[in-house]
Length: 307
Image (tube, rainbow, N blue to C red):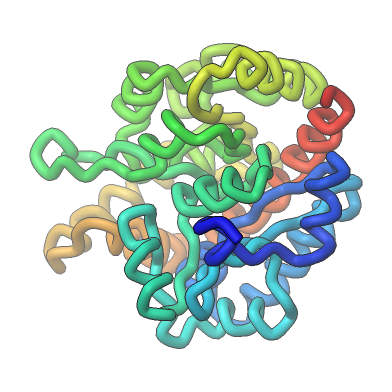
């Protein structure tokens, strides 16, 4: 047994799929443990997995439990993550601590990418990526997601970056690190709740088949890192840009007043945005996540055909 095998646990179904080049889609667990209340998060988790399977792929939800990096969760493990009792939010820097101490951890975008790559999974569906926070010129608050995208060969299908971030600086950072930002039939980079952010993607790919071909070409050339696959929220669930911007500003002021910093910032802001929009933003959050799972599964299916 090599060192990695001591820590990595993959369910038999997912192991068989990876070994036989069947499409697999990685899923994070932070959205379950820190992004939604119980038991709504349980229903959400089952719905996402159902969507992935409906498109012909196999879901692989990740977590850290009892000293193991989990790829695929049992029903009891999923329940554990959703109840979120003493479940930490784990980024790359925290992984060794959580494994060594046996603590339970929910995986962020960065950690899910890392675990997916270890398991041999190339496609990951999430809500929105982290990025450069507003005011980062003073705070240096930049999500570890961006460094992971620069170095880890996993495609992240997302509704762009969370609209509470500095999207312009986030895209500048990705460009500097050589991370392609590919739009799913869009020229505009989406801003989570909104289909447009005022910024453009690097390339507009008209369908999942072309996206898969781009990804395969990148990795065939051994070009380091992953890719951001920017998939806009369905139009019927989009929120008004000016209205959500006003809400975000109020939430940011509240975070500053309460001294919220670092990895606690995003969950805090999303919670208060949900309250300020009387749950409308939460409903949109669900729909964009479902849409990302759907598109990610189609990309995984097309990618499997190319290998």
